[in-house]
Each structure stands twice: as structure tokens, then as C-alpha cells.
Image (cartoon, rainbow, N blue to C red; front, side, top):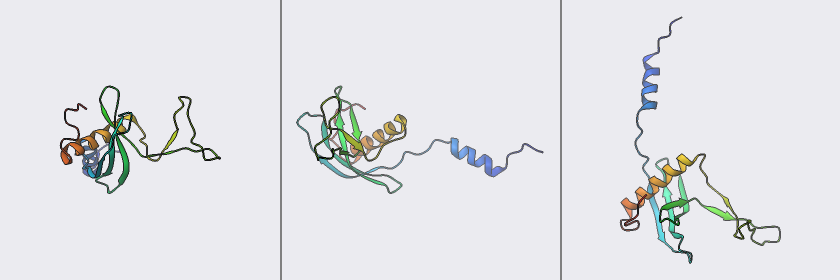
Length: 129
């Protein structure tokens, strides 16, 4: 029995370990909108290179000024139609789209922010990542 790898299996390993190009993300829609609290800056619809379109993401700003992308969600209601509230007294939401890991979510955020900078110059002026 030999332990020799075939040329095809070596090529697969090299392709797997090689740096992957950045996913091409396009902004299909950008709509500026600021909520009264100033934590939301607008709505984004994103098209991934795979063809997946995610509508109604929200461009958010944290207390330290960092921008992040909130995925679409829906408000939860009880049987009587009243909005459910959490322990903090705020309405609760169910995620429609979520990521399996923080690393994946951070990569998505970076891709979307890069696309916003590229396609809508000025939206993120003076903003650090």
C-alpha cells in the first residue's frame, strides 16, 4: 500500500489553502434614514456574488461610533397582538438571517462597508472600521 497522493488531490489541497479573493458584494439599494436615537443610519439591500439578495439590512452605529450591519428581523407579538418586550422593556425581534459565527458576521460587515464606501462615497466619511 502506497501513501502517495494523486496530482488531483494535491491540487485540491493547494486550492483550498490558497487565499480566496474577496467576495464581490454590490449595494442594490441604499436609503439614508436616521432614527430618533441616532443609532440607525439607513437601510441597505445587498447582492452577494452568489446571487443571494438580502433586503432591509440596517446600517447601525454603536456608542463608540463604529458602524455595523444589522440583519433583517421581525418584531415578535403575543397572542393578543401586543408587541413582546424583553427584560430591558424594549420590543423583542426574531432574526430572519443570521450567521453561524462571529467571524463570518464580521467578514460580511466588512464586505458591506467596503461596498458602501466604493458605491456611495461620503456615506461613511471619517469612519473607522
